[in-house]
Length: 220
Image 1 (cartoon, rainbow, N blue to C red):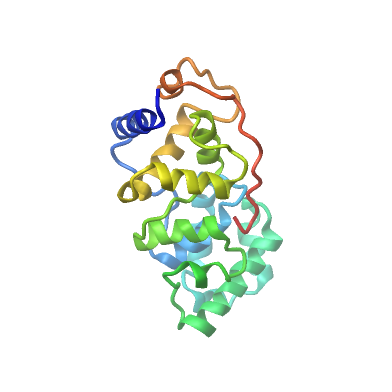
Image 2 (image 1 turned 135 degrees about the horizontal axis):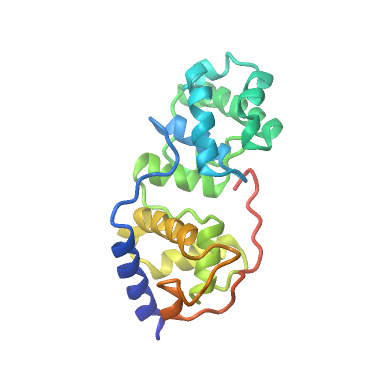
Protein backbone atom coordinates (compact mmCIF):
# COMPACT_ATOMS: atom_id res chain seq x y z
CA UNK A 1 0.00 0.00 0.00
CA UNK A 2 1.45 3.35 -1.02
CA UNK A 3 1.51 6.34 1.31
CA UNK A 4 -1.19 8.01 -0.76
CA UNK A 5 -3.40 4.93 -0.44
CA UNK A 6 -2.71 4.83 3.30
CA UNK A 7 -3.63 8.49 3.67
CA UNK A 8 -6.88 8.07 1.75
CA UNK A 9 -7.83 4.99 3.77
CA UNK A 10 -7.01 6.73 7.07
CA UNK A 11 -9.03 9.81 6.12
CA UNK A 12 -12.08 7.81 5.09
CA UNK A 13 -11.91 5.54 8.14
CA UNK A 14 -11.56 8.41 10.59
CA UNK A 15 -14.40 10.31 8.96
CA UNK A 16 -16.62 7.26 9.28
CA UNK A 17 -15.65 6.70 12.92
CA UNK A 18 -15.66 10.34 14.03
CA UNK A 19 -17.86 12.52 11.80
CA UNK A 20 -18.17 14.98 14.67
CA UNK A 21 -15.14 16.27 16.58
CA UNK A 22 -16.14 18.18 19.72
CA UNK A 23 -13.21 20.00 21.29
CA UNK A 24 -12.17 17.89 24.33
CA UNK A 25 -11.31 20.82 26.63
CA UNK A 26 -14.24 22.88 27.88
CA UNK A 27 -13.77 26.60 27.25
CA UNK A 28 -15.70 29.72 26.32
CA UNK A 29 -13.11 31.83 24.51
CA UNK A 30 -9.43 31.81 23.45
CA UNK A 31 -8.24 32.76 26.95
CA UNK A 32 -10.02 29.94 28.77
CA UNK A 33 -8.87 27.57 26.01
CA UNK A 34 -5.28 28.72 26.42
CA UNK A 35 -5.37 28.11 30.18
CA UNK A 36 -7.08 24.74 29.74
CA UNK A 37 -4.50 23.56 27.21
CA UNK A 38 -1.67 24.65 29.48
CA UNK A 39 -3.25 22.69 32.34
CA UNK A 40 -3.59 19.60 30.15
CA UNK A 41 0.18 19.00 30.05
CA UNK A 42 0.69 15.55 31.60
CA UNK A 43 -2.94 15.57 32.74
CA UNK A 44 -6.10 14.08 31.26
CA UNK A 45 -8.69 16.28 29.56
CA UNK A 46 -11.32 14.87 31.90
CA UNK A 47 -9.39 16.04 34.96
CA UNK A 48 -8.80 19.46 33.43
CA UNK A 49 -12.53 19.79 32.75
CA UNK A 50 -13.19 19.07 36.42
CA UNK A 51 -10.80 21.77 37.59
CA UNK A 52 -11.33 24.63 35.13
CA UNK A 53 -14.90 25.42 36.26
CA UNK A 54 -13.52 26.01 39.75
CA UNK A 55 -10.69 28.18 38.45
CA UNK A 56 -12.80 30.09 35.93
CA UNK A 57 -15.46 30.82 38.54
CA UNK A 58 -12.75 32.85 40.26
CA UNK A 59 -11.11 34.18 37.11
CA UNK A 60 -12.04 33.57 33.49
CA UNK A 61 -10.07 36.47 32.04
CA UNK A 62 -6.54 37.83 32.52
CA UNK A 63 -7.67 40.86 34.52
CA UNK A 64 -9.30 38.71 37.19
CA UNK A 65 -6.56 36.08 37.03
CA UNK A 66 -3.82 38.53 38.01
CA UNK A 67 -5.85 39.48 41.08
CA UNK A 68 -5.27 35.95 42.34
CA UNK A 69 -1.91 35.08 43.81
CA UNK A 70 0.24 32.35 42.31
CA UNK A 71 -0.43 30.39 45.49
CA UNK A 72 -4.20 30.77 45.02
CA UNK A 73 -3.97 29.43 41.49
CA UNK A 74 -1.67 26.60 42.58
CA UNK A 75 -4.11 25.36 45.20
CA UNK A 76 -6.98 25.29 42.71
CA UNK A 77 -5.09 23.51 39.92
CA UNK A 78 -3.12 21.10 42.14
CA UNK A 79 -5.08 18.02 40.93
CA UNK A 80 -3.82 18.70 37.39
CA UNK A 81 -0.22 18.12 38.39
CA UNK A 82 2.85 20.32 37.90
CA UNK A 83 0.95 23.00 39.79
CA UNK A 84 3.99 25.09 40.87
CA UNK A 85 5.11 25.65 37.28
CA UNK A 86 1.64 25.87 35.78
CA UNK A 87 0.38 28.40 38.34
CA UNK A 88 3.36 30.69 37.72
CA UNK A 89 2.86 30.39 33.96
CA UNK A 90 -0.86 31.16 34.13
CA UNK A 91 -0.30 34.21 36.33
CA UNK A 92 2.57 35.60 34.29
CA UNK A 93 0.98 35.00 30.88
CA UNK A 94 -2.11 36.82 32.14
CA UNK A 95 0.07 39.77 33.09
CA UNK A 96 1.69 39.71 29.66
CA UNK A 97 -1.65 39.61 27.87
CA UNK A 98 -2.67 42.75 29.74
CA UNK A 99 0.69 44.48 29.26
CA UNK A 100 1.23 43.61 25.61
CA UNK A 101 -2.15 42.70 24.08
CA UNK A 102 -4.82 44.70 25.90
CA UNK A 103 -6.01 41.55 27.65
CA UNK A 104 -6.61 39.63 24.43
CA UNK A 105 -5.05 36.34 23.38
CA UNK A 106 -2.97 37.02 20.25
CA UNK A 107 -3.95 35.14 17.09
CA UNK A 108 -0.45 34.41 15.83
CA UNK A 109 2.21 31.85 16.67
CA UNK A 110 5.00 34.35 17.31
CA UNK A 111 3.21 36.15 20.15
CA UNK A 112 1.67 33.00 21.61
CA UNK A 113 4.94 31.11 21.84
CA UNK A 114 6.66 33.77 23.93
CA UNK A 115 4.04 33.40 26.68
CA UNK A 116 5.17 31.40 29.73
CA UNK A 117 4.23 27.73 29.56
CA UNK A 118 3.21 28.03 25.91
CA UNK A 119 5.19 26.17 23.28
CA UNK A 120 4.42 25.29 19.70
CA UNK A 121 1.94 22.51 20.44
CA UNK A 122 -0.13 24.63 22.83
CA UNK A 123 -0.02 27.56 20.42
CA UNK A 124 -1.15 25.25 17.62
CA UNK A 125 -4.16 24.09 19.64
CA UNK A 126 -5.17 27.68 20.37
CA UNK A 127 -4.69 28.74 16.76
CA UNK A 128 -6.66 25.73 15.52
CA UNK A 129 -9.44 25.39 18.06
CA UNK A 130 -9.60 28.98 19.25
CA UNK A 131 -9.18 30.91 16.01
CA UNK A 132 -9.87 28.36 13.27
CA UNK A 133 -6.40 28.79 11.75
CA UNK A 134 -5.13 25.66 9.92
CA UNK A 135 -2.72 23.96 12.31
CA UNK A 136 -1.74 20.42 13.21
CA UNK A 137 -1.00 20.14 16.94
CA UNK A 138 0.96 16.95 17.60
CA UNK A 139 0.41 15.25 20.95
CA UNK A 140 1.60 11.82 22.08
CA UNK A 141 -1.32 10.08 20.34
CA UNK A 142 -0.63 11.64 16.95
CA UNK A 143 3.12 11.10 17.30
CA UNK A 144 2.54 7.42 18.13
CA UNK A 145 0.02 6.78 15.37
CA UNK A 146 1.96 8.51 12.61
CA UNK A 147 4.77 6.09 13.48
CA UNK A 148 2.53 3.03 13.64
CA UNK A 149 0.96 3.90 10.31
CA UNK A 150 4.37 4.26 8.69
CA UNK A 151 3.79 7.93 7.84
CA UNK A 152 6.60 9.43 9.92
CA UNK A 153 10.01 8.47 11.23
CA UNK A 154 8.88 9.24 14.77
CA UNK A 155 12.20 10.88 15.63
CA UNK A 156 10.54 13.90 17.26
CA UNK A 157 7.23 15.73 17.30
CA UNK A 158 8.54 18.51 15.06
CA UNK A 159 9.25 15.99 12.28
CA UNK A 160 5.91 14.28 12.87
CA UNK A 161 4.13 17.63 12.43
CA UNK A 162 6.00 18.31 9.18
CA UNK A 163 5.11 14.87 7.84
CA UNK A 164 1.44 15.22 8.81
CA UNK A 165 1.18 18.63 7.14
CA UNK A 166 2.87 17.31 4.02
CA UNK A 167 0.65 14.23 3.70
CA UNK A 168 -2.80 15.44 4.76
CA UNK A 169 -4.90 18.16 3.07
CA UNK A 170 -4.58 21.51 4.81
CA UNK A 171 -8.32 22.08 4.88
CA UNK A 172 -8.71 18.95 7.01
CA UNK A 173 -5.96 19.57 9.58
CA UNK A 174 -8.12 21.11 12.30
CA UNK A 175 -10.66 18.29 12.30
CA UNK A 176 -8.19 15.54 11.49
CA UNK A 177 -5.86 16.08 14.42
CA UNK A 178 -8.84 15.61 16.77
CA UNK A 179 -10.00 12.53 14.88
CA UNK A 180 -6.56 10.95 15.27
CA UNK A 181 -6.54 11.73 19.00
CA UNK A 182 -9.98 10.16 19.46
CA UNK A 183 -8.88 7.11 17.47
CA UNK A 184 -5.68 6.72 19.47
CA UNK A 185 -7.56 6.78 22.75
CA UNK A 186 -10.20 4.30 21.62
CA UNK A 187 -8.39 1.86 19.35
CA UNK A 188 -4.62 2.35 19.50
CA UNK A 189 -3.33 3.27 22.97
CA UNK A 190 0.35 3.20 23.83
CA UNK A 191 0.05 -0.11 25.66
CA UNK A 192 -2.36 -3.03 25.80
CA UNK A 193 -3.55 -2.60 22.25
CA UNK A 194 -4.42 -5.38 19.79
CA UNK A 195 -3.36 -4.36 16.27
CA UNK A 196 -5.65 -7.01 14.83
CA UNK A 197 -8.74 -5.24 16.14
CA UNK A 198 -7.63 -1.69 15.34
CA UNK A 199 -9.48 -0.67 12.14
CA UNK A 200 -6.58 1.25 10.62
CA UNK A 201 -3.55 -0.74 11.82
CA UNK A 202 -4.87 -4.05 10.58
CA UNK A 203 -5.10 -2.62 7.06
CA UNK A 204 -2.23 -0.17 6.62
CA UNK A 205 0.34 -2.28 8.46
CA UNK A 206 2.44 -1.55 11.50
CA UNK A 207 6.05 -0.62 12.00
CA UNK A 208 6.10 -1.06 15.76
CA UNK A 209 3.79 -1.25 18.74
CA UNK A 210 5.71 1.55 20.39
CA UNK A 211 6.87 4.77 18.81
CA UNK A 212 10.19 6.30 19.79
CA UNK A 213 9.85 8.60 22.78
CA UNK A 214 9.04 12.25 22.34
CA UNK A 215 8.84 14.16 25.57
CA UNK A 216 6.16 16.84 25.60
CA UNK A 217 7.00 19.31 28.34
CA UNK A 218 4.90 22.03 29.96
CA UNK A 219 6.02 24.20 27.03
CA UNK A 220 4.77 21.64 24.52
